[in-house]
Amino acid sequence: MIPDDRDQESMSTLNFTDLGLSKPILRALTDEGYEYPTPVQEAAIPAALDGEDIIATAKTGTGKTAAFAVPILERLELGNERYIGALILTPTRELALQIDKSFRDYGRHLDVDTCVLLGGVKSEPQIRALKRGVDVLVATPGRLLDLMQQGFVDLGRVETFVLDEADRMLDMGFVADVRRIVSELPRDRQTLFFSATMSPGVRSLASTMLTDPLQVAVSPPATVADNIDQRVMFVEKAHKRDLLADILKAKDTGRTLIF
Ligand code: AMP
Image (cartoon, rainbow, N blue to C red):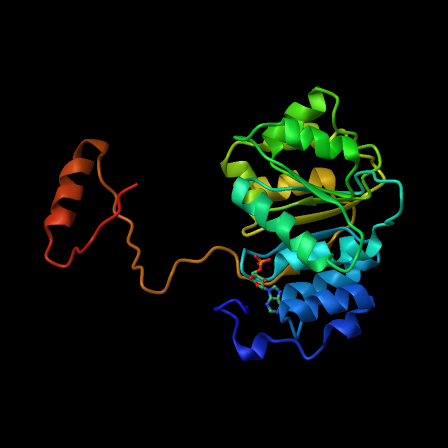
């Protein structure tokens, strides 16, 4: 599926072969029906294959998952010995499951083991999977920290770390957890940092974990939708409710959302 908001002009003229991908991955992308890389894939895949750090402004729907999953799958050394070579931290259960599925889809012609750690479900099956050994670990911060503290997760051999949806991590109050997890990662690693928006808070988080990163931006910084009018009104605090009531009573006020 091609995301709705991509027009044909933003389609790449390069194809996946030009990005230097190997046959098992090219076959998997063909199985998915992908013909051309999306802009974030075109920019990020070659740099990530070269081992560079990346900071990308890209929201869900831009193809960002393949932008990090494909180079990770290419770079993993898949052998008999299973260890966590890639860690992907993401804020929600839904995203974790989606990312795990993407790794399994893009890696279907490779011998790759993935594991997803998320809260709200029993931890025993997750612990069993960790004990069997995994190549790619996808996790939400709370459950990962919990299992790290119980000694079930060894992050000492992680080669690539992905922080997905960094802005939502901040909004959801996960920053302290993320920092604790990152402090357990090897210093000598690749970091791929994705966020839909780049606020000063996000930049400050990024600055602590990236080394000379390639910057990729495929969507403009947060903008207001075209059909929203904005006005600023200065009013004494005591009159705020009256003003709000007047605005709501005005004829042209339709359905209204108040923060
Ligand atoms: P994501 O932004 O990673 O959540 O991806 C959004 C959607 O785009 C998913 O349904 C992907 O399967 C799809 N997608 C990702 N890359 C491509 C591509 N190169 N061509 C067509 N569809 C893609």
